[in-house]
Length: 220
Ligand SMILES: [Zn+2]
View 1 (cartoon, rainbow, N blue to C red):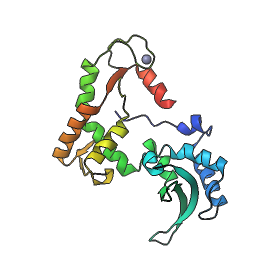
View 2 (view 1 turned 90 degrees about the horizontal axis):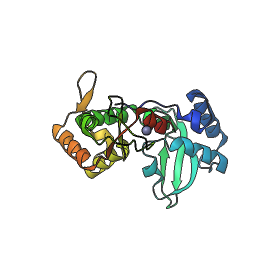
View 3 (view 1 turned 120 degrees about the horizontal axis):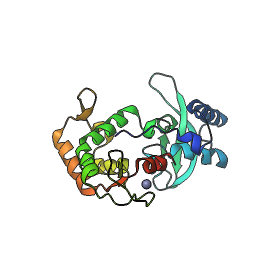
């Protein structure tokens, strides 16, 4: 169920380890004064990192004017410097490169909520695995035979679907309380769980694919 952690920086940035990516980001941070726009090359490279942030589209909003470094004040007195998106309409918002490099580009708490949301709809996935249309793999167009190792893929990305559900309820990830069931968590609010299940049933576009085709696509 959980997506495979993929070292996307190897393919996309040609950098072997996460530590090297972090080192390069820190080098860029230290090159600039506060509120000084980063140059075109640095910006293009940084955006390849930031586009993995789970809120990237929302943060870019109406459009990017430029990226800049700012000092973020901290209550502990240990200020940190990080990147801000200056938008075309004059507004600005911070974006975390630390979060962008985490699995699924999410803070751990957000990822826990997202994992619980997957657990809540796992019956629908299992059902599709057994009974969904199984003719041709939509990723390679070759014939498919129903086997346990086929993947059930979200044609509309799962994260997008769940984010839209939360928005429709005027909720954010942080407001979803989890109930710990040991190895897994579920939503503490069972009414919320029910409406998410209904939303997913109505809106998700599930499709069976070869496992290898799906993994290759996610790695691309
Ligand atoms: Zn295939």
